[in-house]
Image (cartoon, rainbow, N blue to C red):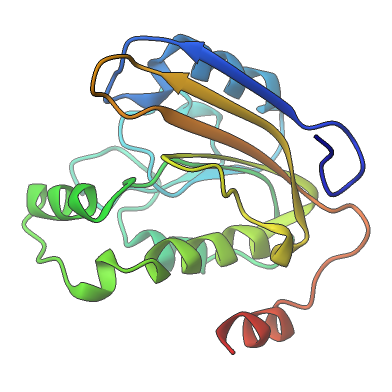
Length: 194
């Protein structure tokens, strides 16, 4: 299967025990190490990530988590300029239920806005906006949608990590922003919201 840039997309499937600390799952850790390089990387949902020290900036809504910021992830992403980051680790809550659990854990009330698909869409827009041309986003969830070609990103690799039994697979998607040109994100956002 070819990626948008014309190269071959890598698709792999591995088995590993589930772990609430996504990056501690061996094949996922190996994938991150493959793409995480020096430069300006950020993580809007850092929790207790083993890669926290590699992030220029990291965020978690929970004020008990040691991070450079403890604010809403969307507000965190909006702090950075267009085309300013080399990479993003994007491991958000995977479902509306997980969002509700995270919010309840810190005493925040969940609203309908927090559990709609726009929650993820707005974050993906901001990630694509802050990535430099050639920048990498490694995202995690229950689908392989990645950032999408609408943001001039193409998928380099998909890793499906099966956990067995009734556990959902963890799907890891590595996107790269095109090297061709930085997008006009004001114009792009208008097209997405039409």
